[in-house]
Amino acid sequence: MEIQDPERFQQCAAASAASARTLATAGVLCIYAGAENTGSGVNLLLNSTVLAQIAQAYTNLANNPSQEDMYNIAITEPIQISLPVTEIEFEIVLEDLTKHLLYLYSALHNLHLSYARFQSAKVALNQNQQDQYSSIYQDARLFAVLQRQTIWRHLMLCLHLHTDVLMDASRVNLLWHKFKQGLPNQSIFSSHEIREVITDTWKEQAKAIASYNLMAFGIETPPAILQLLQQQETIARPVLLLDNQWHKNIAQLEQTYYETINTFYDQENT
Image (cartoon, rainbow, N blue to C red; front, side, top):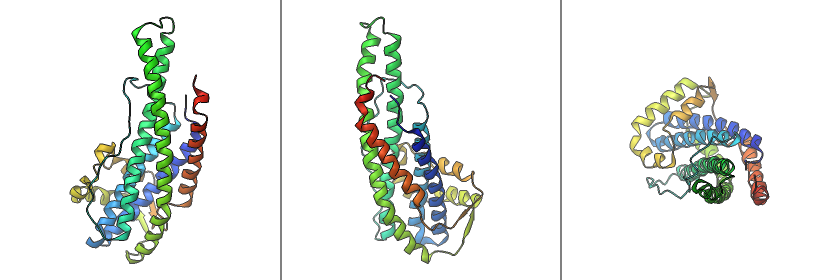
């Protein structure tokens, strides 16, 4: 059993990487605007970091999974995060986006693990086909079913979470359009200065960042976005935070989920 249409996942990886750099640039612009905009800046930098890891998760799903321990079962559950109360509308909307992106990353990561573990169970079944009463064969038979059911669960989760993120996009972009009017007029940012601001902000705002409980979601802090920023020397002042290319690719990926789910048990012997 393999993910359908891996090319779409690669397209989503590229679009998400580009959007992660855009969010990081917007975050730096907010930080430059002073203390009253620090909350928005921190939230944008957090979203950029999560989206950078989502880009890697898409890439992992597009590639053939390496074998994992079939006995491990990945179950994505909601993780509670307690965020500071804010009355700034833009920050409220950004916090909603952060929650959805964190949960989406967790589901994508666990979907990839479930595919890999299912493949391991199938390998064990094939290798022990001649001794179907052995404990390893019986275990593999059981865990192949469990991993298949976990794959289905995460496909459904990813479908719904992609919808949530797509629903966030228009609100985020509209409020950014209004919010940026009060920010500095800098039009071009170097990758170097963005990386420096992110590194400094992560130290200075450690308490605020800790409230997002990133480690519980498996989010590195913040190497993923720093590595992406090294791939582009300069970045322009963002017009939109989540652009049309990103929205189009994510919307098309939803169709891949529908197709995979609708034909899920047609692939039962693969």
